[in-house]
Length: 79
Image (cartoon, rainbow, N blue to C red; front, side, top):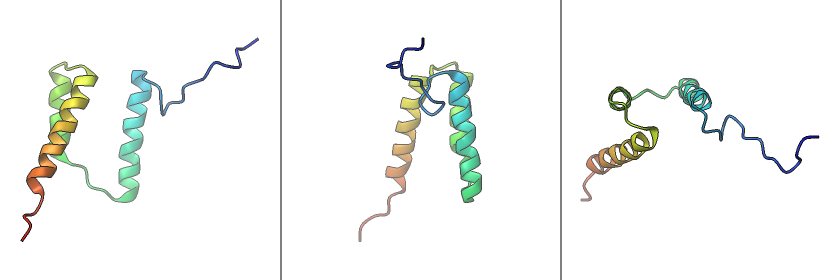
């Protein structure tokens, strides 16, 4: 008899690599549907981190810092 208290993780919450890859692909599909352009700089940044063998937690941390730094540098000056 199955345990009724056991929670089943969906692909949206799973930490399995194949589910994370599926979520990433879905994000690309969603962006394409919405007509959003892909950022080649961020794509290269992520590819370089993967090629360097950085663990996913470190890649996430560095990606967040990179995006935040870009946003700060692009904010218009207040006149």
